[in-house]
Length: 294
Image (cartoon, rainbow, N blue to C red; front, side):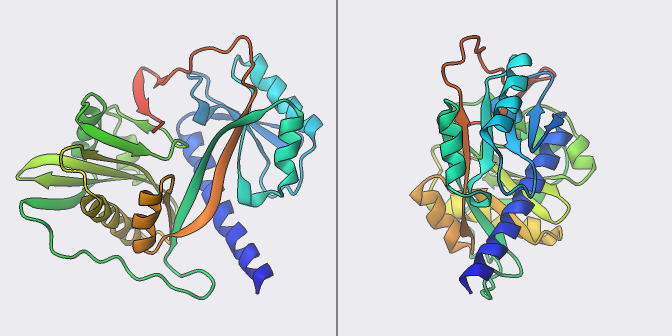
C-alpha cells in the first residue's frame, strides 16, 4: 500500500511539474536540454522563477557533472546559477549533490493539492459556500475587469498579495490568457468596492491558484477561505481534476486542508549565492510588471 501511495503521489507531482513547464513556456521561457537536465531561461528578464536548471522529466538521477553543465549555461546567459525541482520526485541524496557543487538552499515552498477524484481512496468533499457576510459578493470573471484589478492591486499598498512564487502573475493588460481560457479571476466585493481577487492559471485539466490578494483592513481567515473556495469551484467547473496552491504558513495549510487540499511535498531551490556578476533580478517582462514573490 505504501509503495502504491508513493507512485500515486509522484503522478500528482509530475502533473504539477508539467503544468509549470507549460505555463513558463507560455510566458516566453526558452528550454535547452543538456544531457539529463533542462536549462530554462527567459530572454527578457532575470526573474528567478523563469531562469533555472531542472532535471529532465522522468529522470531518476542526475550526476553533479551534468548539473554543472546546466549551471555553466546559465552563467553564459548572465543568469544566477540555480536549480529548482520538486523534492518528492527525487531521492534525498540529490540535494547533497547540489551542495557538493557549492550550491546553497535558496528557497522552499510546500505544495498543497486538491484532487477531484481523490487520493488513496479518499475523495475530498465538493467545495461549498455558506452564507456570505453582509455586503460581500463573490463572482468569477473572465474579462478585463480581473486584469484591471490586478493592475490596481500591484500599485496599491492596501492589499496583501500572496503568490506561489513559481509562476509570475502579470499585472499588465494582456488579455491573451483570458481569450484562450487559461486564466480565471475571482472577484470579491464589499458594498460594490473590490476588496479581494484570486487568479487561477489553467493548463488542460490542471489548475494553479497562483495568486490571491485581499485588502488588509478586511482580510480574515474566513474571507480568505471564501475566496479560495470560489477559486476551487471555478477550476472544477472548468473541468480541472487537480488544483494546486501554496502552503507556506500554518494558517494557509489549515485553510487549504479545510477545503480538501492535501500536502504534497515542496518545490525547492538551490543557488550559487557567491556568483560574483549577479545582477539585480529584473521583475519586468516586455515592460509589464509581474508579481512573483511573497
